[in-house]
Length: 329
Image 1 (cartoon, rainbow, N blue to C red):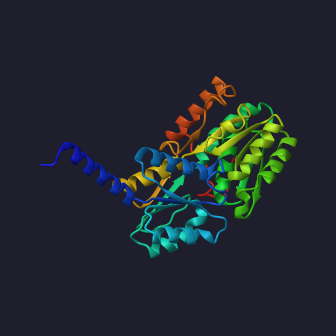
Image 2: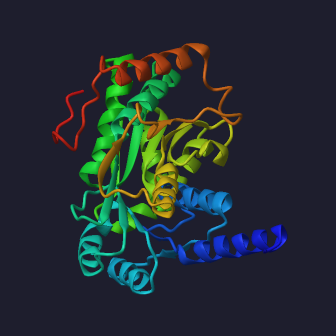
Image 3: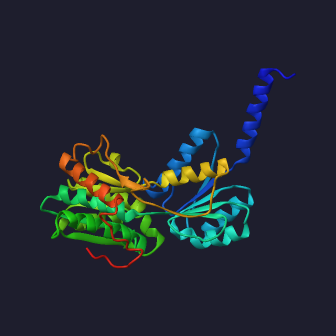
């Protein structure tokens, strides 16, 4: 009969072998995994999975569009599974590579790829943006607010429209200045241009500037802080970048999406298809911590909590620019 210690050792070795066979991977979008925003949220989720399970993951930071398909194919060919693509721009590459490797599980954030081995993860960014729009308008008082987007695409217009809706729910006559950084992937990683656009909006009277611009947003927040105004971060909690100068951050829980995808695949519960994560699902929200708590009054907190409850209950429906490419606010 095997001893208890020998049995325990055998079980531990078997568990280690099983962990070694599970090989998840991530391909980030342009801007890199330390953009302090969208990509970094994905990295944080993967790191949490590694810490909780002891299973390592591999990742790759693309430098150009051609590397999307190359990276996905290399991971699939080398036996990584699941492979998660961060960003809508991976859609064509995911479709091609997932078709070539039907036994490999893939996931993509911010786009739908309708294949039997792909999970598509979408978010209701307009709902979270509506909430920070409320906070921006209340913090601005009689002043105006601004928005700086990254690449000029419907997804980023979706952020902008929700933000305008929230701001105008507080004060219908408020002006919301809007600028997009560019029309190519380079728009996600141009902090200098982000600072320039934010400064222009501040010079026109913006008291608060919200960005949805990836790495470009670092420049937006810096410009707001330098001018003594308030910035609003996005995707990750960016409150700590300029404590006391970042009003809040609109949280897009890409970290949770990556963590859950890895965990589902590991536990054999991975399902393809698509899911849409909004306020009700905990997919979006706003950040309150020691870095910004002094900026959020009880009145502001009550207003945003009431709005969130009304959205979840269906009493307030925030316009979705992706469904109707207009912004009625």
